[in-house]
Picture 1 (cartoon, rainbow, N blue to C red):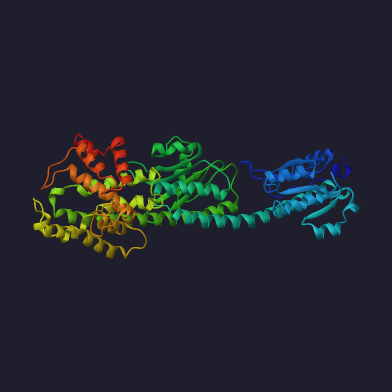
Picture 2: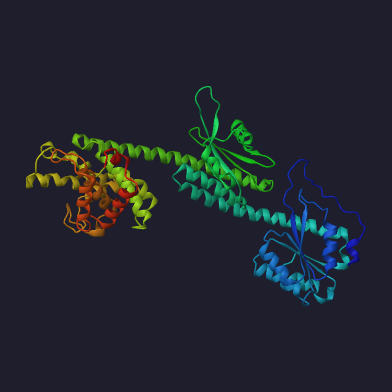
Length: 528
């Protein structure tokens, strides 16, 4: 045992003790790498009661350079290495110091070399050639000097850690904000918020995101759970936050005081977005958050508020667009009252077939989330060009003459032209651009014998190929001035006979799966 480490000098008291009643923070972790067991024992004894910044010290032990390297590779939060020079070889400690910096790329951990043979590794050469932070002969390391060295090293590590955490945290916030802005569902956004908070704080955590909903007059406001993670995942099934839940008072306090609440076992972030929306994110970190972590979360809250604002505006714009599309479809349908509800049934079946194709792994490049969310509403515009068709042709109960048929067929090109012109005002894929594809292509045949262009196979847009099937499917099932409604069995026979000629085989197959597994409610209501 090294006698210098049992010196009876008085220990300096750490000048920032933890406040009474606070949860115990995670300890600083120090690794002792030395081949003498007595050194480990006396170091552990000497540092056992030391605290710094309200945190105690945990000692890890390794008895060779290789053991030390393995520990450091698996335990990235080690703050300080007290490293012997001479172990399994005369320069084992120096080799480990080099591997820490170069192989592990760990520039944060502080390295203090301790040697009982100073002449074996001259101090000046070691300081110049190796990235270490201090070099002590074991004979000069009294208990008090060991304390001073450890505290100085921890203070240095904390400073570097703060700089690195700021850099990583801000990068994470920017990445998180970017990800959140791309989400167009409140539930998905809420789940994303919880995930990103866990990533910023670098630990998995139980979490809940609530929105404050206004109840009827005379009733108290109740936070509504829209996302929850970890062991609390079932909370969102309750709708409102259970009054008796241990987290309910903290969440209510955040909404009441309109500010963040940081407690011993629960932290609640208050987020005020535009349009009167208020949210609270509650989570239980495994240790008290530091000032840096709270600061990063404050910045992130601002980004979350902006994301919620963007989501609200996106929803408003989308609702406006959908209302406009429905109005256009109603205008076209009003010309022919006998079609009643046709476009809405087409919308429902189009969405179902697109989803089935996606689930079956068909047309993956086309059936993107954007496509799936827009193709249904776009489908109701398939006959918008009929507003230009004369009543004498559109409402004729009998068979059309060749001239009348040519006039009737113009509705496809007219609808496509009108919608294409409108879609130029909107960037990217929209219900208008998809509607133009559908209007112009839903009378094309898979074998190339359709109109208006005689397109064939994959040259016909997928949205149009889907609506081509759905439009005929619905028209045959319902009465028209020129025909009676057909039974479902007759309709499916008609469609399957034209699989690969008039209709895309994959679309026909998807329709049949739907009819066999989950018939639409309007079809069930007809008794078919």
